[in-house]
Length: 365
Image 1 (cartoon, rainbow, N blue to C red):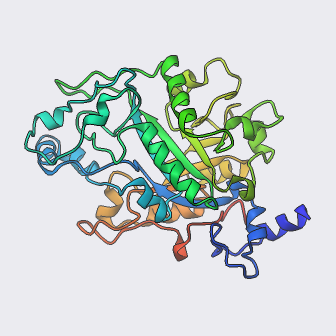
Image 2 (tube, helix red, strand yellow):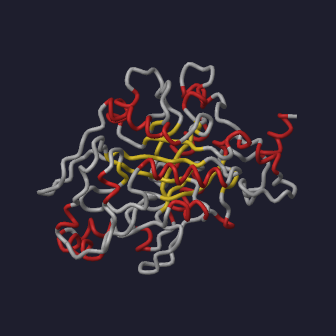
Image 3 (cartoon, rainbow, N blue to C red):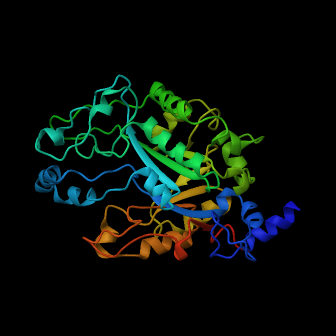
C-alpha cells in the first residue's frame, strides 16, 4: 500500500496544489500526503517582519548612503496576512537582549524626532528583539521574537492542514559602523541556549520538526536526511521547521561539542558534507543552480531567493526567479509576493497560484 501511494505521489501533476489537492487523478490527498516534505516546493518572504523605514528617517539615510537606502526600501505585511496569502517560509532576524532596553532608543529615530509613530515599548522587555539593522531599520511587525512565534503558532493551529512552514533566522551581532550606534551583544553559548529556550516557551513537543526527528536511528542528521528521514506530508502538516542561516563560525557556537545537532531545535546552514547537514541556504539560483539540484537530490532541504536587495524589482528581472523554480529549491524567498508599483510589475509566486507544488527535481518520475 505504501509503495503504491509513493508511486502515485511521484507522478503528481506539476499543477497539483499540495496544500489543497483537487481530488482529481494525479492530485489526490492520498498521493499528495505520501510525498516526503523535502519533495515539495513552496514560497515565502525574506525578512518577513520588516516594516518600512519611516519617510524622514529614510530621507536621512538616502542623503548619507543612497545605495544602502535602495536595498532597504521594501516592507512586508503582518505575519498572519502573509500566511493567509500563502507564504510558507518566513524569516525572523533578531538581536540578543537578555535584560531588555538595549535597543530602546534607535539612532535613526534620534536623528529624525518628528518621524512616523512607532511603539518602542516592547523593546524594554527582556528577550530576543526582531529587527533588521539595529538603530537604522528597526521597525518590525512583531518586535519580540516570542510574540512572532505566538502569532505563527496561532495561525498554524487554526489551519492544521498547511504544508510545513520553514522559519529561518539571522542572528544580528555585526556592529553597525556608525558613531553613536548601540553596541550589539554577541551570540555566545548562553545566548544560543536562550534562543532554544524561547522556541520551547511557545511551541509544544510535536509541533516542531527537529534535527533529531530527521536523524532518527542514524548517527547524524546528514545520514538521516539522505536515507529519507524527512517526514511525509501527512505527518508534517501543521508543523514548523526552524533553521539558522548563519556563518560557519556562528553555527559552530550553536552546535557546540555535538556530533550533529542532538537536542537542538534548529537546523543549521552548513556544508553538504557536514554530519549536521539537513538544511542549506544557497541564495544565488543562477550561479548555484547545479549545486541546489545536487543538494535536493541528496536529500537536503534548500532555501534560495528569487530576488534580493530590490534589484530584480527595479529592473523587472525574472531570470533569478525562474532559475529558483527550476533548481528544485524546496523553499523560495521573495520580497515581492505583490508588486511594488513604484518600480515595476515584478512579483514572485509559484505558477498557477499554487501554495505548494510537487518539487520539479525530487518529485518527478
